[in-house]
View 1 (cartoon, rainbow, N blue to C red):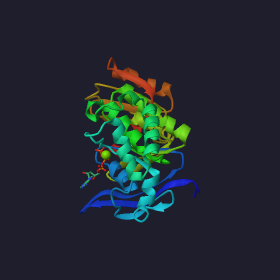
View 2 (cartoon, protein in one colour; view 1 turned 180 degrees about the horizontal axis):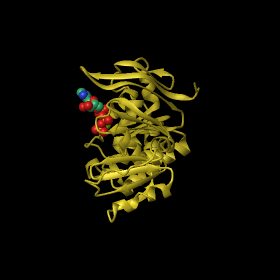
View 3 (cartoon, helix red, strand yellow; view 1 turned 90 degrees about the vertical axis):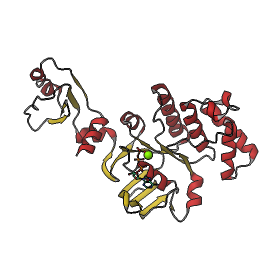
View 4 (cartoon, rainbow, N blue to C red; view 1 turned 45 degrees about the horizontal axis):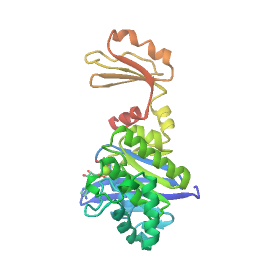
Length: 300
Ligand SMILES: Nc1ncnc2c1ncn2[C@@H]1O[C@H](COP(=O)(O)OP(=O)(O)OP(=O)(O)O)[C@@H](O)[C@H]1O
Ligand SMILES: [Mg+2]
């Protein structure tokens, strides 16, 4: 048992009526860690994040944040949490700066301090020039950055990001990842993010859980999961419909998905030996990645 756990969930459950959206999950997150919750649509990521944020009551189990119990000490928890919900919920009637100032009132931050923090945050997310712009005139990436800035207005020690970069173009995603990295390294903020992008989880997170139908299907460090679940390398063959999977010994795992065949192994020479039987079909020998783990977990 580590003493620096900042979020502890034990047998956490959420029912919507009779429907079980989160079915008894347990995990711990350490202070200063970046922790990812992965899963397909409907896996229970947002429900879990909303329970941590005290925005959706837990049905069963135990959940503590910073030593406080969710359901009993919600005000205290909210004061240390910054929350970026899946949908941008900015106020369209207010300009960029006003969105930050008005939000700061929930935390009773005096106006002068709120103004100073807002200006610094706009600088941090490089939106100072848009301070007076209406929210509707911002691009998708700018709105997302503004919601992140808003979540930081009360200087939280934990930041919850529900799909921070979904729907954004690769450059903007990269930029948001850099900001998240800065928050972790410079301000030592604990970051909990949900995503269905494997590259995002691999780039940002120390540890992660994969949710499938409200249960934890896998947990660990990305590199560790890749090593233990799929092996170091993958031979991927496309347009292989109708071709039987090759007979392989126990050192190689063979998987077929539609017209795709994938072989996982520790040794590139062994995998390369399988290539001739596919003739001129498109194929690639590459390092395994988290996506391979994810597809395996979801399929199993
Ligand atoms: N308010 C609600 N009432 C009833 N069912 C809900 C509610 N919110 C979520 N659900 C259901 O709970 C399950 C988990 O939903 P959740 O939003 O947590 O998934 P998610 O992993 O965040 O998915 P996505 O990647 O699409 O955001 C889904 O089946 C969803 O339909
Ligand atoms: Mg969601």
